[in-house]
Amino acid sequence: MKIQILGTGCAKCQKLTENTEAAAKELGLQYELEKVKEIAQIMAFGVMMTPALVVDGQVKVSGKVPSVEEIKRLLA
Image (cartoon, rainbow, N blue to C red; front, side, top):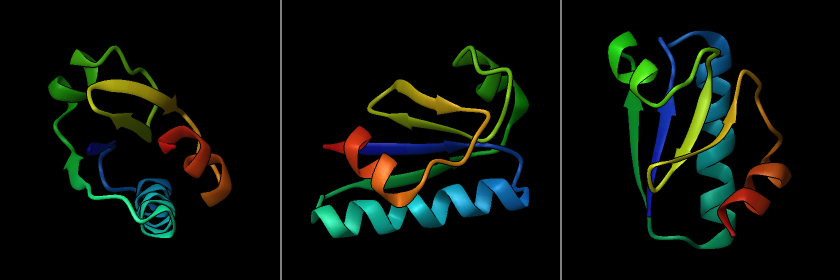
């Protein structure tokens, strides 16, 4: 599973990264985490508000930081 965090590195982006890693570990998933900070790459996903969570190329959340429980549902 490829997980991407889209964002420029702000506090919300860091929190999304932490929550996503916690959720993936709790679910026992094998995953690769990539942080996408380049604005052009973020816009290529059609994302206008960061942070955003992308799983296997599909945007799951943008513009907010979901809880660990919410992310677990998105990843399952």
